[in-house]
Length: 514
Image (cartoon, rainbow, N blue to C red):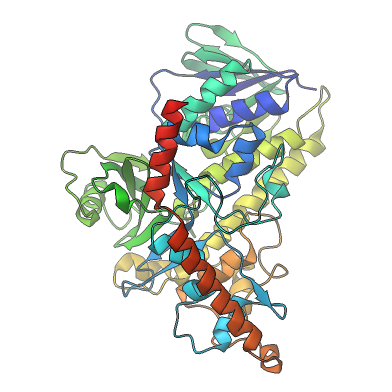
């Protein structure tokens, strides 16, 4: 087995990798080198619900790490104005209940549709609208029986749908995990990388300003969009997604939140003239960012549009402008070098997949960790899995843009002309006639289940107009009872749960006492 690992680059990707490897592979020596001067992109992150497996694997209690990372809860994404008429819908972490083998979404299609589909068939949108925490003050999870003792499980072990993910400050998460990793024996080298040497076997060493040549059996590239080792040193080609996902820049602001009780337990994705805006609520501030395509607007214009869209004065706040490399490396593992995070792949941040890609890459690396002999099969299978995850997410995201009804600007008119990936074309053709199931969504694991695809299809208004004919053979009483149960449980949860801010404030004060 490879006995020495060198991670080049810190940040979220680097320290997530270092922390996980230090726990999963205690017999492996792990070092991480990062510059004291290199800036980080992270301005605030939204995540998948699978992130709980990462922290549980490290045996880190949410009550311990979340307050230290300015964290908040994410029950859903609120899609605002994708219809072009100011309306919204939620994409939650919640599977639909079934009646007679059909989801409540199917039964909603069969009904009078006086209620929005998400509010009728999910509990979560009601909690989001009321700004409720998913946990009671005593820490209990609302109305659920999901297991919270995951032990050393991975994201692929997730059988039940956990009802929330997190928002957190990416820099603070990196700092928290660096402390964890260093305490577990990871060697932390603060130095500048001046060169990466290569030979016929891949990377032969990393030159640093003050520590000389650093060598390892396996090198992990966490240098972000620069991809210092995989792209620069090993010249691995990068496959751009610009033809189907044109947004290539972002501008972000950190905005203090004056009214704490208005902290929202969800991410907002609101359309803008040349892209969309995120809102990520953290404990003491909101993160705002405008993701756009620079063929349609300039950085200066985008910043002005972003500031004008925020309901408080931001004139004294510095904006962070970000160039994004959208696509994936042809291979993420080449020879003795594995790229994790932005150095491997990045797509539209619309569905919060950045941290998900990092976690997936780390977990698969542990599964296919190399031995002392070169084994091409390990690399090939790793690359196949990473490729399928990224390609599946790409198709899912393209659907958001081509399916959006907004068409009042050149950007939104042009995005409708996006050439569809072949797999997405097949999916959307089916969706014209019926909702999807696990047999006809993107066939490889990519993190999004059929309920996610169907939520976007219904929310964007590109799904079937009628339910499957089979529903006509059943009486609707059981379905009516199913919808009534959703309303009842949602009302009970709103009545019993504290606000999102109230619970997080309690958690933060409690952590100070401990």
